[in-house]
Length: 405
Image 1: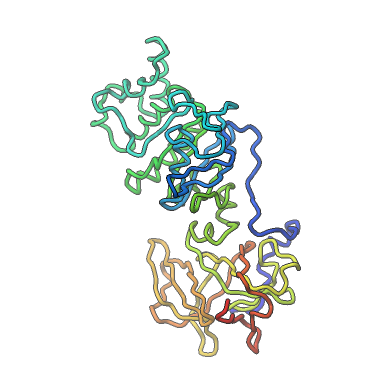
Image 2: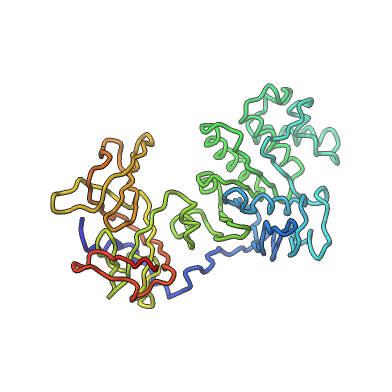
C-alpha cells in the first residue's frame, strides 16, 4: 500500500470545477420535450406518494424511473397515463395540458400506450388480432399493412396466426410491445416490463426492446427497481426515493457521479471511506492521497470530514506483510469470473474489493488494500464534521472521528 497517490491524472486534465453545492441538480438539457411534469404531487389521504416532481422528457428519449418499492415511481407512471389524478401540479403531453387545477384528460383521450408487467394479451385472440386491437380508425387494408409492419419490427412475421398460449415469454413481450406501438402513441409507458422473464431472457429482451423502440422512434418511459436494467437501456435515469427525484441524468453520470449517498448506495455495491481533507491532502484509512482525487474538490472544502465513495473495482487487496496490514477479509462472494471480498479495515470502515476468480483469499486472512481508481471519486460531507471533529494519528495515515459525529 502506498501512503501517497496522485491517482487522478485524468481529473487534472479536466477543467477545474467551481465550488458548488454537492446536491446541485445535474439534469441534462431537454431541447424538444414531448412530456412535462411540473410540481406534480400525489397524496392518498395523509400519505404523500409523490412530492412535487418536475421533469421534462425529450422526444424520442427512453427515460427510466428507478427506485425501491414504495418510492412513487409506479404512481408517477399512472399519473402520466391518466390512471391516477395528481393532487397538485401539471402534466403536459405534446403541448397539451392533460392534468391541471382539477381538470384531467381521460386515459383513453391521451395519446399514450402502456405495456403492462404481465403483458395483458387477450388469450382468445391471435397475435395479429391482439396487435390490431387498438386500430379502430383504420380500414381493413390499412390495419393489415400496419400489423405486418409491426410483426416485422418485432421479428415475428411468421407468428401472426398463433395464440398467446403458443408463445414464449419473450415472444409475448414482443407482441405486447407491438400492440402498444400500433396506434403510434406520443409516449409509450412500460411498467416493470422484464420482471416476469427469467434472468437470461431478461438481459436478451431489454436489448431487443431498446432496439425496437429506437427503430420505431417512439418516446418511452420505463419503471423498474432493477439498477442494471435501468443503466443498460436508458438514455436518462431518474432515481426516486420517498416520492422525490434524487437525481436525473445520463446513466454513466448517475453511476459515476451520484449526488447523494442514497443514489450511490442504490446503484451498485458502494462502500464509503471515512476521510478528512487537510493541506490539500485526503487522509483515509487506506493512506493519504492528493485531494484532487475528489471529484470537484476546491480549497473551499479544506478542513472538512468527508465520506468517499469507493466501489469494488476501485480497490485491490493483497496479502499482508508482517509490518504492513490494513484489515481482515470477513466474507467473499463468488460471481463466476470474479470474487468480491469484504474487508473490515482497522480504521473502522468496511470496503469491498473485486478480484479475478484465480486470486483467492481466505476468510480471516489479513490483507493490505490499495486504492487503484483512475477516475475522480464521488464524496459527501459528513454532517456536523469539521476540522475540530477529526483527529489524525501520529503518522498522519488515517483519520479517526469522534463518536459525536
